[in-house]
Image 1 (cartoon, rainbow, N blue to C red):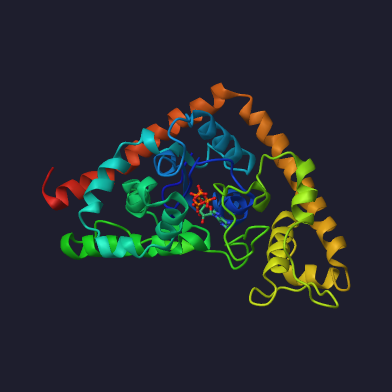
Image 2 (cartoon, helix red, strand yellow):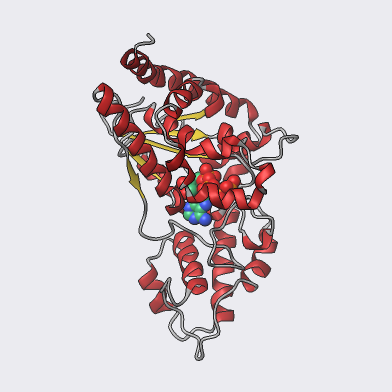
Length: 335
Ligand code: AQP
């Protein structure tokens, strides 16, 4: 049973490839606990994924993989609404309306658009990539969301969501709730293993940069062994994202998979060599992934159950989002 008096929390991940430990640490690891404090909506953002995926590939399987991972991370369909974005047409409807309240100049400033455009070459960049933040604003605003747990990379998009909502509200009254980001102090931006100046991303062409949640654990040791640290002599393990990017990144990952605070880890790792530190990190990631993957497999093997969750989630999400869409239509006079 959903308790409607709780604040509303919305979070989503694109099924644009295999989910990474960055996705987990930045958002998913918080989802299970959040169900006790909020009315949660967990969305699989397949429309967003269309901006970057290979268009010849069908993402049906990725959607089911993503859902099974949500469940393995402790999302409970009896407590939360879990749904697939494309099955709730209200998202596309509001997307168009909000695009008429968004400015070209503000979208052009979005860092993620600039980064992805570089990766895709100008002629391969589609308009969806540019409009991505408006669809994200629609996702959030449709549910009168109070809180949005995100990684640091999405902060700018959330600020834009608030600007669009405020602009709309200023004209038409309080149609939309203004959402707040929930960005945790640690782990909100897990970096690439071979280049700790850039974010770990599921679409990275170099798979050695990334730890995937469903990858064979036998590859973890070599990925972590080759990860970039520093040449400090004597080697020292402490958290400092200005001076020690690589070490700090590994500490954030270790902290998330062991549930130990970074300052405790720093003490435990005092005097430890980098090679030994990397062994500890690899070992802890592997243990964590083996447990997660075991639970994932149980859910993933039951497609009937997964499809039922998607069906039920869509019904609930449509009902909820329709209330806001109705308000919006009425505000602009197209009801
Ligand atoms: N490296 C990361 N560290 C912390 N949080 C991260 N997130 C993504 N990467 C990291 C957070 O995960 C949520 C869902 O992300 P998404 O898949 O919807 O979009 P994204 O941010 O574009 O993620 P990727 O992995 O980089 O995907 P691709 O490669 O497809 O673009 C978000 O809350 C995000 O902050």
